[in-house]
Image 1: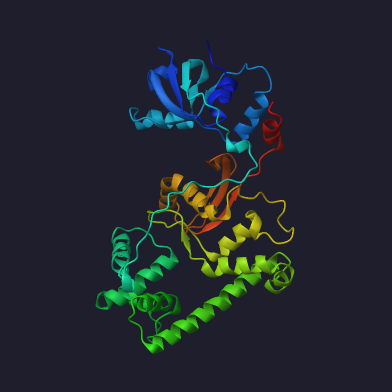
Image 2: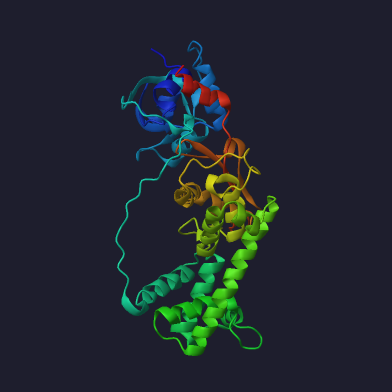
Amino acid sequence: MKYTIEEIYTIVGKDDKTAGLQLIPGTESFKKFGSYITVVFLYTQAEREKMDIMIQAPFTHSGKIKAKYLGWDLKPKPVQLLNDEGVEADDIWDIRYFTASEKNTFHSKEQRTIKKIELPLHMKSKGGDYDWIYGFAKKLVKDGIGLNPRQRHFYLASKAYFEEAELSGEERDEIFEANGKMKEVVEWEYLQIKLIRQDITNEQTKKLGQLLQAKEKTDYAILDKYLQMVGSSLEKLTLKNIDQAVKMFIMVNDFKEHRLNVLGKVPVYLDIDRFLHIYMRHVDEMKVDKQFEDKDNFQWATEDVFTVMEKVVTSIDVEIQNFFVANPNTRYSRYGDQSVYFEGDYYTLHIDPCGRISTFHKNKKKALALAVEATGE
């Protein structure tokens, strides 16, 4: 019995099931990969939509199907061959897989949630945790791990607090203005450390209050700017839907520059501008009026979108880091057939040379793929 590519898609590919492949002795696939391999088959969005059409007709097609190897025995070259070229369907003798039904979310319009494990966190009194947090930041710098702007400001503020005498000339230039005053982006972090450690003067407390007021004005202004870009404003939205206005302002006010990869010389991160740009186009509760009703929404709860972005970036971070080593002044992009697949969706993303996310969104799906699932055909 020979497997067609349609049958393989139907029994394991469509639902991203783990498949154990018994290969026919003497075939090219057997020579490259051995007698048995465990894989998950890989499809671009266009290929998946094409397969949804093909399985409506008799199964007749042969060919190679790309796959991700899940074992440990193969050497890097055949693993890469599986990923880049695939395994020949005609060379498969038997496919073993878990037979329970599992709905692939590619064909679903339902909102999803990330399963989380919440661990209790016990904070030390008087900011005692800052000791190890600063120690960790120091290790990142020592190991050449890139910091995003906010992480860098925190590191500089912490060093100024814990080890001021150890500041280098370059670090002092980053921290202080020509007149000797601390730059506000660093001072904001510095005074918060002093406040939490209960080591702050009345004058410093007053200054922190001023910085807080300035931040709130800045947050108001940037949210208002993005609302005006879609034909509204914070004032108009407050009159029309005060609950949404308040919720959006709180999200902006609470926002902290968000790092999406853990390690790497280039920190991949989301700043407030791109947060608003992305969320106001692709997160339903952040959309205002009908400006972006044609844009595909993330099919995740709002609080899970950051996690999804982290998962997508982490899955390709080695590639991202290698790209920027070779192309330090060029934007990194994944789109079209190179879009990143995660939990039933394909994502387009662009990353600026500094590591800032420029674009991130879920690709639209052709109506036919969804119609196939809806009709059960």
